[in-house]
Length: 129
Image 1: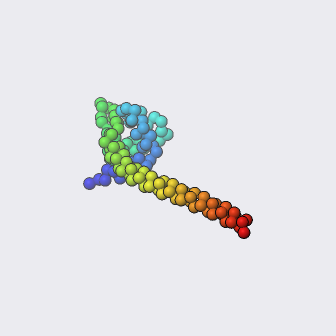
Image 2 (image 1 turned 60 degrees about the horizontal axis):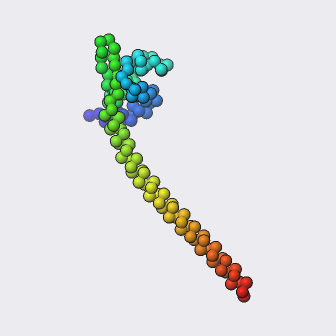
Image 3 (image 1 turned 30 degrees about the vertical axis):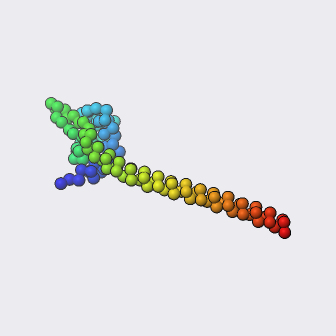
């Protein structure tokens, strides 16, 4: 069985494939239309499309002599759901760190203020002596 989540992230690691997905987010396109903005061969585009298809990020259909491509939202949703899990985790961790640092800062300010008050009291008691 293929690990589709790993395949999705591997597919998304390539900037050409991300650009193809961005184009398909606007609507269906033929292989030729997808190849237009790139300075690479049609077989190279086909290889990129095959990677995206295996990762379940796109679907390719034959329409007469044309191969039409469309985005598969479920493939992207699986990757987005996985990332969301960890976003929540790190957000909670970073919030806890921020709370800790705020408390530490307040304690430092209080210590500094207390130390200053002690110095002023000590100076005042020396003058009286």
